[in-house]
Length: 632
Image 1 (cartoon, rainbow, N blue to C red):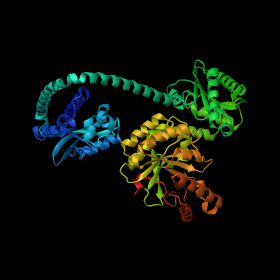
Image 2: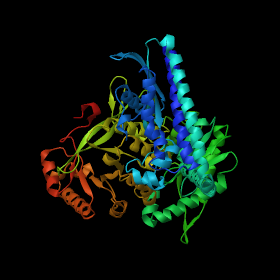
Image 3: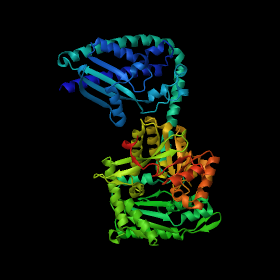
Image 4: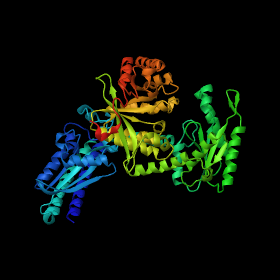
């Protein structure tokens, strides 16, 4: 009962302080009171520490209310003890808003209560972009900018002495609150007369400001609609994308799914070029949309050369078999026209009516059709498609359980500079840990994860744990992102928020695979530019593992090229590998791009790559991946 009473009283004080801060701030922002040396003293940002100190004195030190931060501009507002602990708690639990506990120390028994202060849209009017802040703020301060919406800035901390709590705490608190309220009313009366002096001058300005706000609001709403559209639609065809399909499947009842994959599309790209390949994909999309996307049938553009047809009302397997055959034969019979030349496409299709994991089972059927050189296959358990597919389903369920039970963990392997002036980097490598302690490598589950709706969640969980581990470490850290991550607007938004929140901008490297989407230069460049604008460095992993497009690498402006381990592992026994690596290093140096040799497994290999002039080295000879707790 005593804890409940203390919590309610602390909650009331917290609410009053919030109302007090917001009222004063809104007056200045809405009524355009000029900010100068005198008027700035009226804002809570400058007088809140004095008010709360006086309040504590009036309450005979039995009540303390402070607005504090671990990054204060005013030293009087620096968080200490339980205040710091509450800030760390809120950062670790972003959805929590209140932290409280009963404590007993040298100050006696007391109740501590803290509520989180997050950056609001109102705060950004003065502390967002420097060029948009009021003139006085720009002239007076040089560091009060760059806040982000939703960022944790500090807490309102209330400490209540438990001595004689039952007898007089409520009376003392509310009497003094009444005094503060009365003082606030007196201030507001004086404030009103001050406002009248500026009312006439501000009428025209206020009208223009409202018009400007309305215009910007409309522009923001339009931008928000555009971003949401891009999240759920394919840029090339305008069709709903894989993300939209996954969301639909989460709420769909009984449905049938057909996946269509173009045979040998890479050869078409290689022969005609990617621009012609895009034209062909667009023609195929239009053909499928006009011919098959009727009522009750939705068409989706999946990654690369794949499409999906989702049926709402196919009740029998025979109907699905007839429909998939009709679609495949229709594509095979259709003549596509590219630069005056007739082209006929061959496709393989897979379908499923499974109520659970319909996408996974349709994908299994499609891959089975391609493997067996068949035009189409409808998934059926009696087909016994294979242990590998059943294992994929089991891994999908295992992955979900690992996420739910927080058993996805990062391991870290050092990337060591050969030049002591360069920073030590740790690459974050994902691991799935079973309940019995068994550790699974990413090769066992990551590709399967990319085909499930759990993959975006997996990326964000991994990023959060990496940032938490390195928030207070002096090293740089490298985070692997896939093409799916870079094309997911929601994932990018969450990542950029976390990067700023954890202060990782100057120490974060993003790694992407050469084989994942680098041929889709324009799309990839937009996503990478978003990270570069923050100051994050970008690396290209496994360079040289296959067809290496030197032109795209130059245009994408990478900071580090990581040379694939297949070239490095046996470099001391193979002159052709040595020539290839020397070519890559020379190419990178001319573009001012640093290089890293992967899979350095011996002193002999290390010495060879050192002589070739690589900048970084990585491999078991230099350090194996290990948990964050083992880092020194």
